[in-house]
Image (tube, rainbow, N blue to C red; front, side):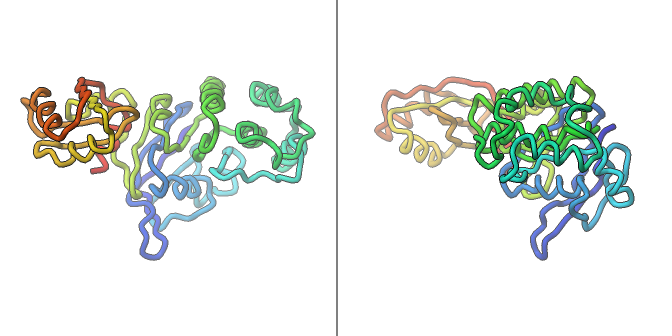
Length: 300
């Protein structure tokens, strides 16, 4: 059972948090909502998990209407909010038992579903949740969201503030959960995580920019991108921004991603220009577009 969102809008006084949002998540799909802080991701999650009411539009989760069937929906969804919201004074085991009891189940009954995750935190089962590391808190929160065997799982920026190793482990866990028949909607500001989803929706200022597979979004990037580097990154960025034929200039690790307005762009011409700006060790190499490049282009 998937998710259907049709023309959802939500405002807070004069602030338009969501504007005519529409998309579908197929059953057993890992769908990513990709965008920066303030894009509207959390507001949408709260509407879909029946914690907020939209001003306009309709939505169903697991075939149930988020307004008419809000009590029923809560039995079938697992929700992991962006902020750690478990009881910090309770131990790992006490938190898990508490959430299992709320849903009328037990750790033993659904242990197979959380086993891969829980075995990593079981050695710390007597430790208070507030004393866990970021990665361990994340695993505990996911275990609590899964303990009642949900059909749909909502994860709101689950890897924010977590170390790279824990991030990698977390996404491996999501892939295993997907294989168990759970539909997953995950939001993230990290563009590199977008490539791990089956499909993604790029969102900015409460509006959907594009929905497709990560591969197709990258393929549709309209320009040729060049990795540009020089001896002085700050001066390089300013010089490229001042270049009369520049289309876009974005720092990207040790390089600057540059696109030109002309279809017959000649890198040698740009190199000559940069040398005239007293830059040295200049390198200009063609490179592949990324999800981040696509997002920045669409957001313009």
